[in-house]
Every structure is written in structure tokens, then in C-alpha cells.
Amino acid sequence: MQTSIYDQADFFELYQKLRKNPISLNEVVEKPTMFAMVGDVSNKTILDLGCGTGSHLLHYLQQGAKQVTGIDLSTKMLEQATINLKSAGFNTNQFKLFAGAMQDLSQYTDLQFDIITSSFAFHYIENFPDLLRQIYAKLLPHGQLIFSQEHPIVTCYQGGDRWLKDENKQQIAYRLNFYRDEGERQRNWFKQPFKTYHRTISTIVNDLINNGFQIEQLQEPMLTDQKQWHQEFKDLQHRPVLLFVKAIKQ
Image: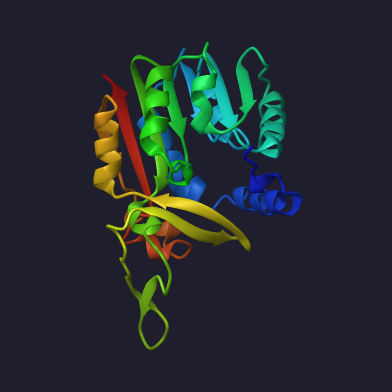
């Protein structure tokens, strides 16, 4: 049975502190881009894969979604999501939360959705085509899949310095290597080892097309037009760290 590093108390606390920072990649880049791509959710049924503490679910309910569902591997995340959603005045007729891996989506035989979203999660998935087949089956006709993941120029990293620096140790160029070598990557965050999986942009797009989706929108947000964030995210002025995709069930 899969377990989540987020269920380790110290790791979960560190993550919570990170997410509460109003100047974070989630708040400054991910959420605004994701919510703009999702668009009007009035009276829609929505599934969020890797829902975490429910911040996206809360937004969808506040914007008029009919019902939202979240799936996450971490029970601690889901406990906090329940607290957050109930504290905002929503009840269990309006939201449902399930503990489990998104790769096992097909087990929820009675669920179908207008919209399926996922943030910062698909680069953890080894078998991407199989996940897409399951998502396709869970979408209603002309349903939408909108997701963000680490950009392939980030997931391709296999070691060494990510940046070329000058004599003053200032970043001058981002190193791109091992891009065509798809597959598993060993990573470390908060001193915790974990795996991610690198796929090129063409593989991601072609996997979507081959599983019946029509690509409607791609986004690679950077911060060149948001001067107020340049000091905090100066390395995002010239390269994207996230890839966003919106696809429609044909």
C-alpha cells in the first residue's frame, strides 16, 4: 500500500508553513493561472487529484461549484482539508474526500465529473497514459482536464549545478540537460528522498491526444510582467518552472 511523506508529522508541519507564505509559487503563479484556465465553475461537479489541504476545492465551492471531490494519498492533508472546508461553511453534501492514489481512480465506479483538475502532481506519476485513460473515463462528455506540473525543463534534471554562474555567483543561465532521457528521477526535498518522472512536452501532449483528448490551451507562466515579485522569484523572469495544460474530452 502506498504511503505519503506528508503523513510524517515534521514534514507536514514544514509543508504547512511553506503553504501559508503569501509569496510562494503556489500563490503567485500556480493558483492564478490554474483558476483562470478553469474558468466558470457554476453548477459544475469537480474532482481535484492530489487535493492536499483543499485550497482549490474551497475556491471552486466559493465560485459556485455544485459539488467538489478531492483525492489525496495523505490522510493528514485530508484531515486539514475537512477542517478548512467546514470552517468556510461548507458541508459534506457539498464536498467529498477520499484517501488513496490518483492512479486508482477507476475504483470510484459511481463518480463522473464536468471538470477534473490537478496541481503540482502529475510529475509524480509513473504511468501517465494509464492515468489519462482513467481520467477520460471519469469525465462527462466534453468534460475538461486542467492540470499543472513541474515543467519538463525542471523534471529533466539529473544532477550537478542547475545554474551557470558568473564570478560573483550570480545566476546567468539555466542548464538544460538529459531532456530526451525520459523516466525516473531521484529527488530530495526537506531532506526527504522521493521519485518524480520526466516526460518531454511532446510526450505529454501526444499522450493526451492518444487517449482521446483535444488540447485547448498550454501555459508556461513567467513573471516578466509582475515587477513586484522579481526579488523573490528572480530566477523565473526568463524560464518557466510550471507547465499548465487544458484538454477536452472529445
